[in-house]
Length: 615
Image 1 (cartoon, rainbow, N blue to C red):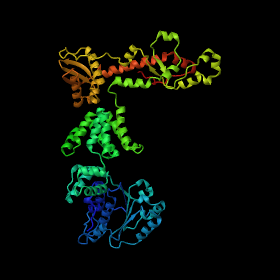
Image 2 (cartoon, one colour; image 1 turned 180 degrees about the vertical axis):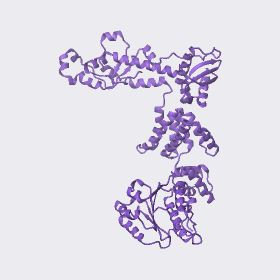
Image 3 (cartoon, one colour; image 1 turned 30 degrees about the vertical axis):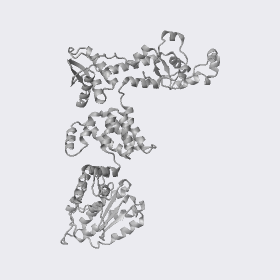
């Protein structure tokens, strides 16, 4: 006997065997029980969710004769009478299935409707089932409208489609519509376990989870993939074989990538991406799995109460629950949202790149590019390197007048991204020539400067550069005295200097860095420091322990306590105040620059608001 695939062998024979469509089963069961039958039904939904199956069960319910041959319309067809067995075998004369994908013309529809004038041959009702009905032509739809609206009492229409938007509203209004939903992975997993137990085939739970997720809501796809996994695994369904068959990425690689991104470890990200390339794993699947993990992480971060349910899921056999909870505490909520968005958009970019693994690496490194800088001094140097003009630009700019230069030899000057060439010496000596040829003079180039962005570049004086590089006092060389008196006002300076040092050294990152920046040192008792922070979300145990370990490694505090309350002085507040002061000085310097004033006075130039950036 030839082998019958699982999708056909385990097709539901009655409503009680239907899985995942309880809302449709309940409505049809009640209608059959109460004899409130509509003349036309429309079943919609994605592939493999049971549209054709429901149609056949409905046809059996309408024509079932019972084991004794005296049955009537029922919601529980017997499955043994001639009508039920004939419908299951596809040879019942009063049940007709028409595939509209290949029979979409008006002639085929008219040929079907010609049979409507004849009463049932064997059954109680004629049932016309039109699959993929949205593929019919407009003429075919129009041909069936009258019969669909007022069919004979012995005729029932059952329409099925995966795209109800393409079905004319004139047809929709004549049908009772049911939307069959995609199967949740948990439902698919449970059904696969039941099928494999009936087949006496050993299966690993994690392998079934992979198959359930790969089915994407389709029970037929899940059973087909299970057939393939059985053949691939030689009669067993094992996780390693299923991953190899699907080309899916091991969740350990996904967790490694997210952990590396949370720690800002670009080397680990690149190495893991190269490892995926070496094993031939799918880059698109890697981004998809990362999106799924990040979604669960975001839920845990937004609703911490769900951590208890995550622990229960871990105890119930979900091996990913504990690791996802750990990563949710490690990665800040805003970076989780950013990485989730990057993964979603990265999947669309894979086809645009010449190498999908290079596109995967770029998508992952994009988060590191947008992460807050862990070393402000290094970030400042990078920005200075970007904004410092080339030597040609500096030499081409007109020199400031002598009095201003002598009065402020280290004052910064404005630099335009589109440098205006200096006024030639001949034109400077001959004002008439300068006015007679404006197209080739400084005036012609200055028109561009009215739309340019002005930034400030400090003069190379060591004192001024040191002041711009760091507005806060240098942290003490030694650790604070562990036996000092309770906190005083000077502790705010100590805490700010200590936090700045830890951040610059990269000793703290992510939530631990934010906890340090947003908190205030309120008291010290020996080696025990007491902090106060306003945001409760920053008081997570992981951040607290990492900050304490960093302070202990720096020789500052052995113990650390954090309380919730108002903060009057924190490193973040001081940094923001210093940034505002630098911004004000930069704006004042640009406005006072003689060259900028000349452009504004002679050519009506303006400084674009928000375009000045201090170094």
